[in-house]
Image (cartoon, rainbow, N blue to C red; front, top):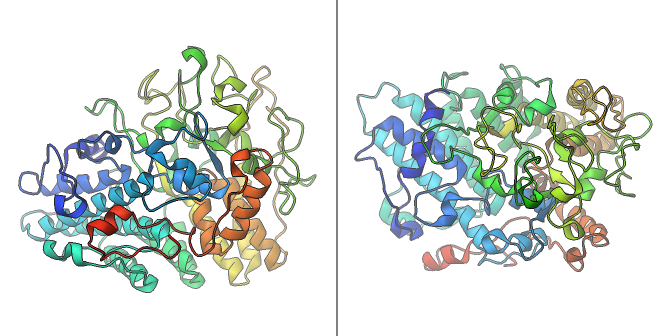
Length: 562
């Protein structure tokens, strides 16, 4: 691996937040006084995985507030159930509350997310301060530009999760930190995010030698995404086109994209870099998704990962969404009228289903000992038969961490922005600007890749497909309403269980109706949804952690409804 990836594990020992800000005393601190500028920049990058050196167990294992947002988007949006050992099995104490939209300001999950993001922002700001005061570092301006994109990312995460934050940068005096209000002025907050990105664009190159560093196209991608969230469609296209004209592409093999370290480099515009054999205890791994690998009864050695906690379980609704009609097109309005049974291999489905979701009886990533089985699930009566298959490493990979713990982890990067996502941003913007033909043509690029990717094969007859797969292209001459439905479903089919759907529902303005309809229908299968409801004007965003409001002496204000 290149230099950045080789030293990323240093993050576990690097600068943390000051005690008077988050009331956490860092341990084994390496600070700006005894670390060179390059290492401070690496420290800021390491904040992407939400692990910190506070000495508390939860901060080395961020599975209750993962950077993939599986617990803040997927289980709140209908892409997934919480999973695990039942509704009482709650990492962080409040994950089930997230799932049924009964979150309180005292939620530890919510607090840990807030802490993780501000820890990371502190690292960014600290590194910028040091670089600004350094005169003999040849990469000074470049590294400051990288840091500003990272800061934009972390504030973007605060914006989409909380809709409010206290803006702090390298120029904020330490003594003023606790007196800065958390702003609810969205124009101001988006403006700060965009200011960092635009400043960085003027400095950054289009490519970087070190794998994982941000570049000009990453900054353009974030600008496009910021404009997407604000509904500024022409600007979305302008900035997305900058990325589309670059070196990124849709890779050919979805199985490898979701399984093979390094294969997704051409498609991942920006990804969290993970590694093994880097000098750390287990490797710099995706510990936020650690508990999401499938279970293994009695640690069966014929099982691909030996064990797992079986969280983040794909919902019946997302499985149903992969059904297609006789023309190979999605059932836009009726896919959830009936359930695709877990052992049904005759009903035609989009081939992406079995690349991304584990179904009993279907081959698991070329594993030779057995196909997926029902007993890979910990709690079938509560959460059903499906397990998440995306971004679980190929069991045979040389870059897997081990044959046991940490189970399905290794040097498999997690994408924050994929090229397919950027294409769909442009498609959405074109459709909203009434250029339906362009939007549908872009959607068809995504579908063409899915149509041509190698299929999942039958475990007992490898020359045959594992199920009845069918996918065809949309007509391009359709109504805007039809195109909008196609775009929104295509985002789910392509990006489900990657931490996007909840935020899409919110920015589309349909979160209340969609999620309430989803939970009402699911309550006939998942009894814990009975009586659950999503409250408009409150549940679009997480509450500001009460502990932060208290620590601020009332300077921070709570969101309405909490």
